[in-house]
Length: 302
Image 1 (spheres, rainbow, N blue to C red):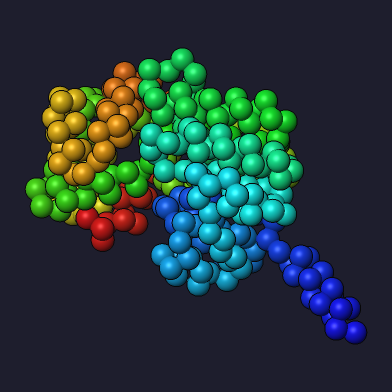
Image 2: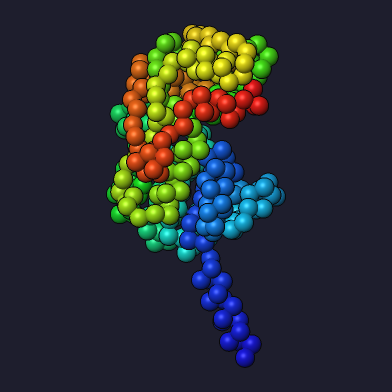
């Protein structure tokens, strides 16, 4: 009788176990994804480095936490057990390519049918931008693995402006090496909405979505719209790449990441990130948020 009860309990547990895995769950995009899933009553498993640092995530209804480390294949195998769709996101570090390739290997071994990978606008193996090269390598590996995929290639995040919060608050200015190039930045909340669609709906198999906002703006135009939202004057100041590099180092960015961000901004400065797509609306049925939407919603942060 006790054996039958235990067996029944295990069956129920297995039946109710989440089939979605979210990596990068405590980051900005991961938080937006898990919030949407929880609001929609969709259970999910979130891979975190430490349960002790994931209290806010654990409080979301429908969350199952699992400790995992991209550098530990055994922990990846445990996180992937029983998963049908996995969202792949790692920190932008020198280890990112190797970590994501290790995840793909374990996902294939675990029989995961579908990976939704957060990639980057203009990912290409021959790009001069290291971030774009590594994303292309991982995309190609997923294609060759036979795992069904959805690749999300977002442009610059509007929320990246929060990285300039201190000079905006203290000086009414923000700085970057981009000149007057336009960029079709996107709100991370729209990225999350597309990710949730790809994780929970049919029709996204082996698709690549290039995710942008509805308009391409210069950083000076962003400053104007931020001024409107804050009701005070904000100025954008173009600076040489060397000055931006030094500022990133002072802000405690590792050298590798500082150099990588300068490559990104050189890419932006060549007007190579100004294209506008309708992929957000095509996938979600809702238009992508404008920059002024972002500026008004995040005004208290500035």
